[in-house]
Image (tube, rainbow, N blue to C red; front, side, top):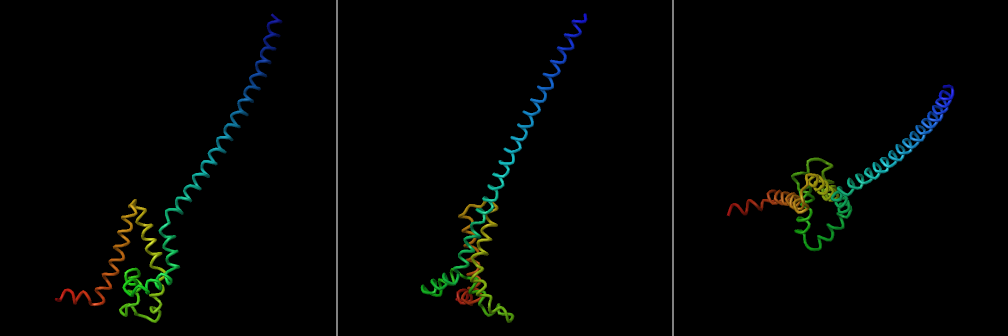
Length: 169
């Protein structure tokens, strides 16, 4: 019986040592897997963050184009003047509107046409960005910007008195 007890104790110690060693091995393995999983998750999150930042920047392409055209505004206007004044009115209706005497209300409003010369295309780019957020196709955006220009031209026609001559005949 003493042999059985001794051998049982020895067997128990061996089993316990193996169990502790096995648990420690599993714990190390689990910890390593958790760390690798967290590293992969962090890498994926970083890639998604970069992708979202890239998408945000590319969604603003109409604004970037508007800013570029806005900085080239005086050169574009000068090029259009060579074709005639009507070209400037078609491309820059809000600049012509800002120069109308009806809007000259104060001492600083004389600078309004110059401000509109630089700001018209960035404003239209911002308008296009807002429209594109509503999942409108590019042709729809171009149509709405064209409508924006058309309304400016219509306002010019109404202010110039040409409409009165047309409708009184």
